[in-house]
Image (cartoon, rainbow, N blue to C red; front, side, top):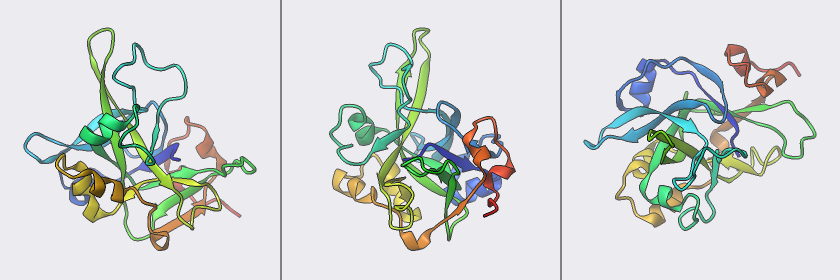
Length: 222
């Protein structure tokens, strides 16, 4: 799964790495948490990429209100193409969720200290995301997203059995392109190359959403 992540790149690096033509005055985020409004990348009608601000935790279009239960922050890749919850978004509304690392905890909860997982070869990457537009009772459109997850690779499997889909740079265009056929899209939802995956311990201060500073990225003392 993916319940916390970071995105700290300066605007110039964002434009270069993700080829976006519009920019936001983004502040570095070291401990992004569900329900927060954060940057995603989508396509403009012109076909150019643009940074947008969406809520993390997809609100289904048919909802009468913002769900009071746990937000839909992740969308399982298995069955995503036909499922009621994410199927239409998968077919029509896909986005890139830029990040430079994410956090994970042991699934059995035997240790509450988190791990930080990064791409060993790239300063930043993009999760595969799906998004939805929901109209609130006041008539405003709230755009929200979920991060697609898949089975963990062998590097991460000892900690957790799931991981977010980390797209290869060459696959980002296909994920965004509304003309990409379903078999190709599904082929992208695979565990990331373990040889390119690096992880290390960080301090338990990441557990609190109140902590959002560079210390969240620091290696913890063993």
